[in-house]
Image (tube, rainbow, N blue to C red; front, top):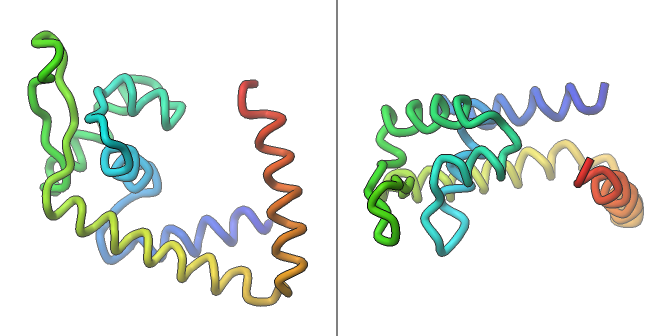
Length: 130
């Protein structure tokens, strides 16, 4: 129940940019590192099939948030780069995500938030490689 409520608040927070959660995560993957990811890198990071990564990147490219470019290191490969608009949207999405999380967690005290964080980290670390 809590997971569904949090997902609904996250989907609502993404509405101004007409992004799905997958698209938001993919945009984050493209914008977050120094290296320019290939589609396979994005698929691995998001734990989705390469075909799904292609569809997500296609949608981001259609919105003008990313572009494909030849890899400077491997002429057979294509990398995904954020556009200036993509970087701006990613920053705004991160702000909206922070605000949505704050609103969702508002009923918890700081100690309760810390306990929740520790427990969730334990659950995700134990299952990260499963």
